Structures are given as C-alpha cells and as structure tokens.
Length: 84
Image (cartoon, rainbow, N blue to C red):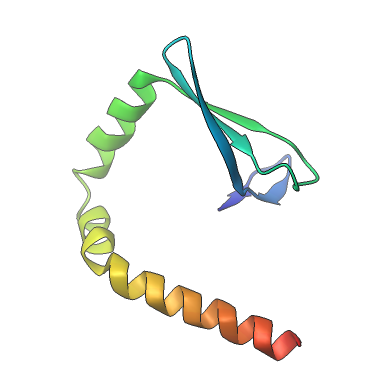
C-alpha cells in the first residue's frame, strides 16, 4: 500500500494486527525503515463503508478485483524479472 502525504511518501507493508480498547491497530512490517501504526476505530469502519458503498467506482473495483489482482501481480513479476 502506498501512503502519500505532505510529510512523506512511503510504502506501507502490513505487519501484525492487534485489538486494543475497541480499536484495530495495524502495525507496519518489521522490515520497514519507518515503523508506524494505524489505529482504526469502529466509527472509522462505519464511515468508510458508508462512503464506499455509495460510490459506483467502489462496486466496479470490487467486481473487477480478480482481474485487477492478476494483472497487478503479472506486471509486478515482469518488472522484477526485467530488473534481474
């Protein structure tokens, strides 16, 4: 996952998940140079789902997800092969 902001542009790789005080805490992978945590509250989940289900592009992405996944992995493998 890429995170782009005014502070930093980083690749966020999921590490382990934790549950604490009604929050889902997503830790970055231990191998990442910039360690971070993402705190997700129940309200965040409801808000995100509420906004997502109203958008036609969300549904288009969900329907096309298997195709996008295969295409993404093939492109990624081709780039890795080209670098070798």
